[in-house]
Image (cartoon, rainbow, N blue to C red; front, side, top):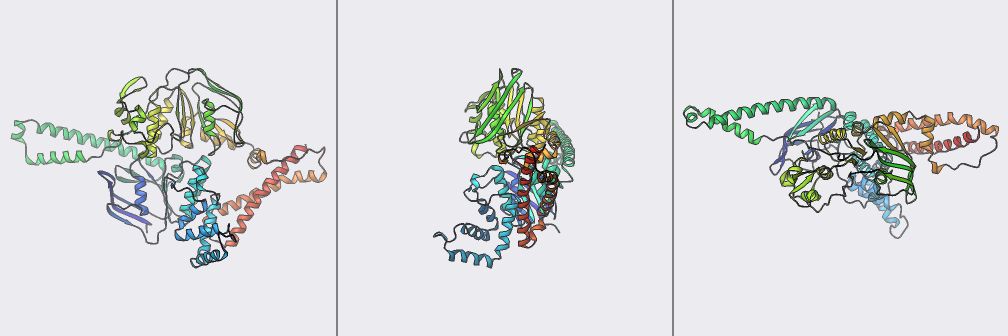
Length: 627
């Protein structure tokens, strides 16, 4: 029996059909990826499934008891709540009670929260059997490593996405709807989400532009194209193959139809001769063909991208010599030396907040290092795509952001009408005078690309250009960059995009360290995993600032020598126990146990982490002075 069914569902905004007699069903355990161009109606379809939007026609069948959670593409504007309050809000009225109780325990006994009010809250929660639900909230926060009392507006974009995911998961949904869940997440968070969703027991429908995520996660692909929904069982590569075949068949059929229509139009225009010989049936067929042609919805087409490298820069584009940069006492970049030459294609990866955008600004000369030198090359023409889109004025129109209101602009040394140029980026004529603030994220990204590609550039700097772009546009941008002859600096969390575009990777590895690796993301994974385990573990588990090395001794005692010999075995045992517990905690049934057992297990996991930290610190000390 399916969890949910759509029968002959239609929905249109104005004359633009988003859903045209759509049929769809999803069964338990399926992981379905919904794909389509920007503006095709994917988010609208998820809203119809969740019940937020109503279809114009057709039937949406779902059991009354079906639990559906929906992660919207945009984080809610009300960000003044704490993380706990935001997550608990996914439980409705009970969530508000739990939030009041969570806040009350921090003010118990004060004039703001008398004891009788706290007692009344406890009583109401008991009536609704809310203590088990409270445990679920705390468990979800623990699993996603979220700070319960931190305000949402103080969190990074990636943390906010995890908060909204926790809100969607807290009700233990049978059907989970995710709209671009990887937006603003770094690679570590994306891979974590991937593993989490692979272990998710319910059904899943998700929208994403992350092709690696689709390949690893989806059991079926459904595509929304010009209002029509088509299902492609199997993996993403099977979808690409079958889609190409379908487009080829459609193109041939349309060409054959148009040729036949042209023949009929020529016949009807033959004048007297045609009127003598024509018959009513042929006239009716011509009228029907005209009607069919007028109702055909053409494909949206493809973005036409182009960037000119211009005059070649000097051989040295930029050089860093022992550069260091800190912000508010926090080391962002430590003693970095590197040379970027003409034609290099460099990807920059690292956790959110690690300093990727800061490094770009150092390389562009917009920031000066605290120490060391930044030497800029000669004859540099730079085009900069910033992830905040600060170059776009939201109160100006699309036309004004490109041409300051003029009808013609110079595009790489050639005069073009602004409407013609914007059509290359899929902006129809009626859209060019719309204010930028009403554009979708994908449209804003296309507009910024249109803006920076108007002039030649031999240094192209792209900071998160892939957010909100559909897959077709991503692949076209990849093709453009593959043929680009200038120098490229790229910050991205899109693993496939990095693999297809860059030839070397700069990775932020913590505590201000930036290391260079040959190749793209998959190459970095292979090289990084080849690091000796002991060195990698010590680097990861013993941050430099936390190690407090005592004064060296002249010689280790016999007891200390024995301790040094036993420490590796003890560390190995602790890591195995840690891994076993983490595997248990990642299973959904773990949180169906007794509350005391859950708390005891999580407490042990925390204790193991502290013991490992102490063991590594002790091992480093004994190993340093025992040689």
